[in-house]
Length: 85
Image (cartoon, rainbow, N blue to C red; front, side, top):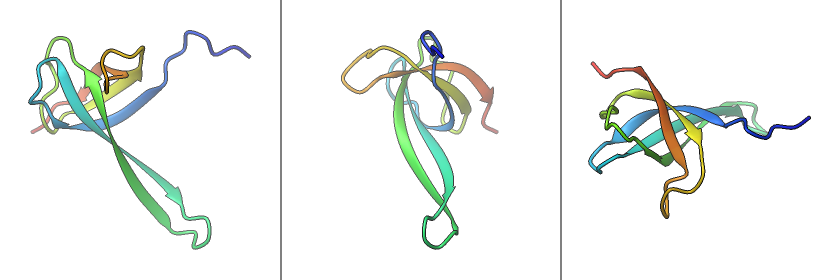
């Protein structure tokens, strides 16, 4: 079972597009709490490379893991799933 060459994908919302060719994407995950069995939501922000500057604030995007592009960027924008209204 080799997973070589397969990227890890995440879906999230662009919270900042102020940098050139970079967007900050907030990814939410939901899981049941170990003791209380209630749904807990956690979010994490990722910096992603956006070469054509297509992502704007509020857009829903899909990002994929890649090689390190800078100190903080290890993801790239694959597609814009939904544009912000």
